Length: 348
Image 1 (tube, rainbow, N blue to C red):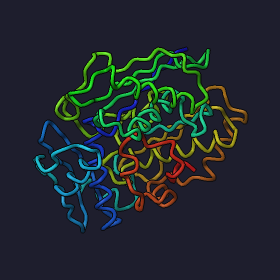
Image 2 (image 1 turned 45 degrees about the vertical axis):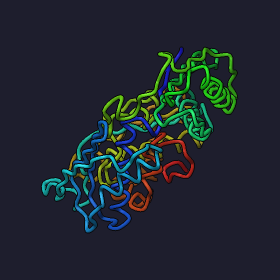
Image 3 (image 1 turned 135 degrees about the horizontal axis):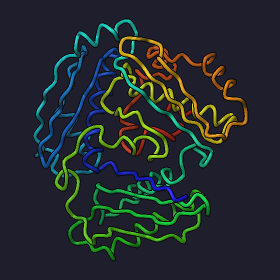
Image 4 (image 1 turned 180 degrees about the vertical axis):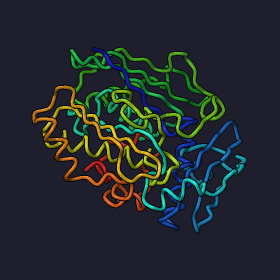
């Protein structure tokens, strides 16, 4: 079986929007831990629209936050971006359910873990993510912030078949000039996971990638949910994470599901585990918990279910308290994925 996963860089237009949304969230929570935030962002060229609902004692400086994020990414001319703000308070109908510790919305969330890698993530996705981090750390003056990576992995032969990186570059650079840098990143990323480097290498297949980020495509918060999670290896409930405070179970429920799946695999009870949680708006307890180990379990599933019932408070407030989600810096997860980093509270 050959399975392919994709990751995108912090300069991708959708990821620019995720980072702005999570920076707004973090700013609100740092001033008012009980802030209710649902911040969305749209970017095209130099125009940025921030929209959504915020109920907080703190009023964010949206323009300052936006320009700070753009500067951190490495985009030029940050003062040229125009910011339109369309933000109101959280609906009272939603608030009345959240105020009694109920879920902020209905929905289903999935968490996944696998023993394929030390971080318990699918190997093609882990390699793709690692490669883009290495590419950014290379700090090559020929390269610009927008990039995508795609890794195809043969699970039968335990090797990468095709490694693709498309990266934005300065106008003066050619593919031949950037190829050595990009291929070195590919090789290092594969070797860091103990994989051979005899794969097909594709670097900017169109031959040119000068126009990027919001000038090549529009960007929108929540449009890279597979790159945020498990690279397509796990099912997804459809809810995005960025810009949402942890009373929204799209976020907190997904983190809790990953925590459970990770704990199951880390304890050696299964080689892979997928956990589904489902919630009803205004209701604290999940309406269902489903655990699937795909036949890899070494202990009875009934025992795993019993462990989950006894050891996890899966109400939104229980998850928030256990993982410290009102005190977390969400800027840390707004690019390069929400899982796999041992510094995150749901990863240990």
